[in-house]
Length: 51
Image (cartoon, rainbow, N blue to C red; front, side, top):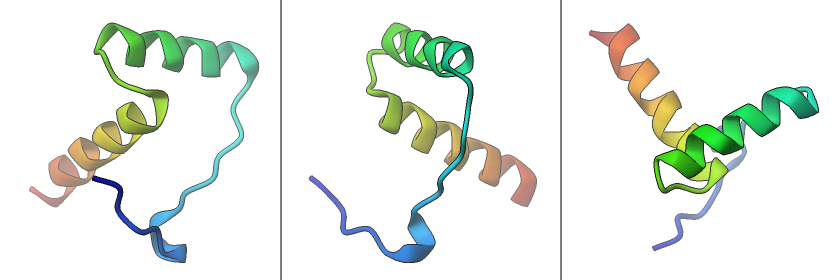
């Protein structure tokens, strides 16, 4: 199920190729795409900060 993206939901960041590779590998180990991994990680961090 794909959700529609609004301007507020899109986050852009520049990372080095090495950082991107490390993130991709972490996502792969979790069985996720990089996009899904980053979304889940951001949601967990936001919940932790809000608690």
